[in-house]
Image (cartoon, rainbow, N blue to C red; front, side, top):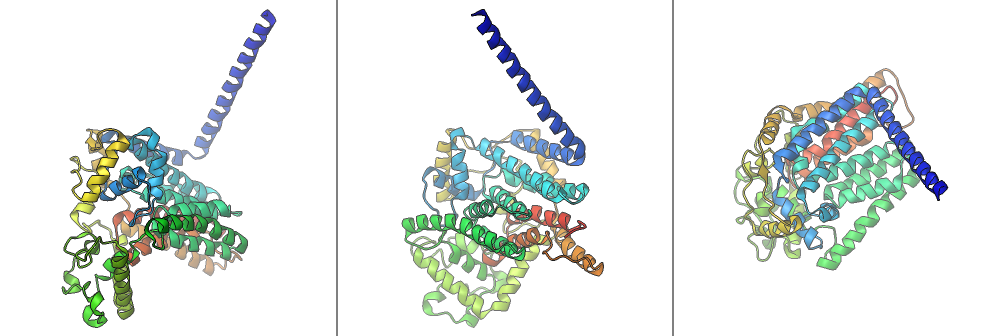
Length: 478
């Protein structure tokens, strides 16, 4: 008995020694990493502190009009006509915590993870100072931090896309994982769909056609499965039922019915006002006085969606140059030095840390969503503003942001470096590594203005990819 007890004590002691040794090794490894990457570790520490201050200042999270519709899908699982359910599925995974603060906290962790991914990918063969600069915008930009605290899909979408691109840049990219990440991104925001083609084309350029095929299969199978669920619910093809409506709204910035000469059934969607006197595109989707909204039935019925799509395609065919000019005008907003109010003061205000608690929702759909949100939280969902932390973040937002003009300069760095290499006669049989994040960033910037409208929050997911492309482009090897 005594010998058995002594043996047990010895085993416990050995186990404790083993755990202590493992902890020491982990600590030593972490300390070694910090010594090798001191500037990035300091940057990451500051970024973490800013997010902690945000969570202390705005509890449990910040709300956007779209937030409530996401919660409806969480509590009543079925496809939404306007937004795919990826973000709702993300919130569903966190439902056992019964806390929107947890949702916001995880989104802040995703923002930090994106910074780590950008630094890791940029520093593998390039200078660490460039990698640190590339990670700085996503880690420090006040609008990025505020977006992470909003209950919207953009942070999750950004993390999925950046992870897919970073994996695709590897020498031996895991095609299945990349495809699944892009599928998840597409089911979070539909703008992810063209990115599947972009990354598959990259695989082909890298002379990996089999991996491109595997990627396409891995990405499209989940998307088609979701489409089957959508069809079973609405008897309509696709993963959303609003593409025609938003494209119609986009064309209303230039559509001239005198040039289009639409048939009578489409003429009801015309706006007699000159293009320069019309409201922003979103008003043609949500305003009660909009021609499409005044039609019988809900805006996104099968009939209204088909009508809107026909009108939009007719407008683009009849006025292609006006369409391109309109898209270009919206895209230019991404590269302005300032941040003028757009599309209206209400939406613009959601992207700033507020000084007073946001008002309760008034639209019917949002009111219903708020009821579900209280069920999710099992309590009050109103945002509590706690000083001085909230004030610190408001002041910080007045100072630290990435101006659009700087983003344009960052996007110009890779082609400029390519021209420099050409003059130096540096050649490679493979496409430059910066090409994938650079192309993806442009796709993220250009797609929303082409199919819907510009929005400031749509720019932010493109920033880490643009910065990654710039950092990678200054490497000596392509």
